[in-house]
Amino acid sequence: MPHPSPSSHGRTRAASRALIIRDGRLLVEINDDGDLVWWSLPGGGQEFGETKEQGLVRECREEIGCEVVVGDFALALDYIGANHLLHEDLFSQTEVYFWCTLAEGSEPHMSYNPDDFQTGLRWVPLDQLPGSPLFPAAISQWLGADPATRPCWLGDAD
Image (cartoon, rainbow, N blue to C red; front, side, top):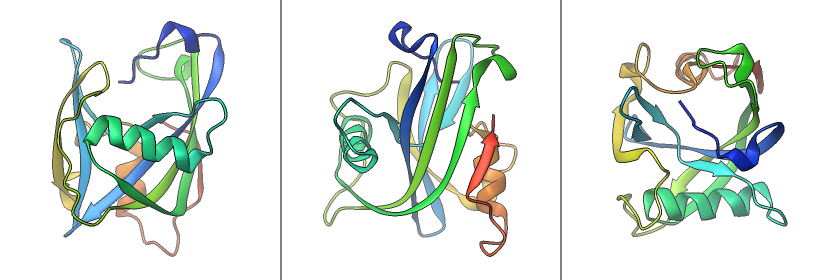
């Protein structure tokens, strides 16, 4: 699960994430902290002075080693750590997800600045997402739903 930096403790952090789907497969980051393996979507915390889109482009460059084109807004959610599995009482994050594509000629690879627990990247077929270690799990359910009925706001999700 995301392990926030001490600088984010006790405040709500803003983050943006990329939904990158190609040939029926979702690009995920593989994370391993020695106790737990989970998948997450590229992206992360918005820095002061950045738009959500600018932060997402920077985070993708750092984590998946390539440029992305940020498209339409897809969904948003809160992660309130105290309410979930790891009981991260001092961590709360609002995440905004965008549909993204890889820039022309770009291919994802482990980059110069991956997240602390990031160990790899993987293209996962959409039908393999239910029951997978994708975090938050609500995303796999959302992707499996009829696009006409998908909510834009998932609330507090894990």
